[in-house]
Image (cartoon, rainbow, N blue to C red; front, top):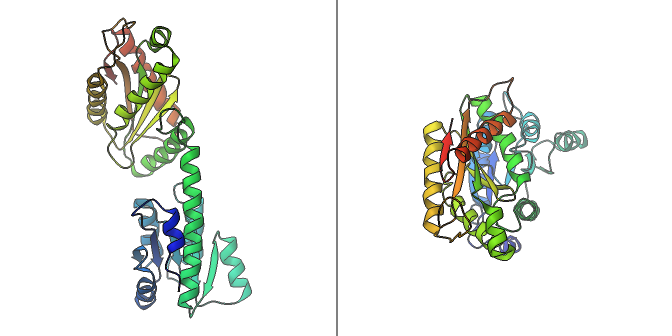
Length: 311
């Protein structure tokens, strides 16, 4: 029987894959849980609605899903997962008592990655689960590389745009505010001209890591927006929360004590920040939130730089 050694060789040290088992029969959940608990972090749901909620709260690496369930059946659950950008990449393996060819076709057309008929063969289930987890891990690792800024190591513009779209829609559904900060390194062109591009790159890396250390919640994101400009996405934050993060960033960058002899603000590298908060509406766009933050950044620069304006 598979011991998941192939998965462990690829995964970051100590990482255990998360598997969600969805079945309206507790005895079936128990059997799969016993089969996988030594190698995986296993969560469980007895109905489709609970499964969808769990996938939103903490997306698993794999879903093992029964087809025949009351209210929301497995096919409906799978279609909803695949329709939501936040959960579309989670592989779904159907584990069901149905075994007709048309049942398997329906499951695959709904977005399923695999189809296992009951009664299950434990050795087959473990092997298939490991294979799908490996493919998911490889996909995640490639995506992480593709969505990181090569110079600073923080998220890049593409990742930020994806996250903004996802969290804007989530805040719209839930009626929560969404905050953003636009951040600019003060007089960075003068820094490059004075110290050279190699030291300029080092400056950006140091500032990026300082800023990233100020973005603490799981759904918050710090990204390089372009050149010397960074952006922070703060879903669920109100204006006070955005101001708190902005002040933390000002302090952390000041603590770096990076000399900037060409600055017109002071002897060390500083940043200016513009923040905005909006409760998403159906007739508004995420781009408006960024435009508001950018307008506040302009005010911070006009006010003398090395400060934050949040409106």
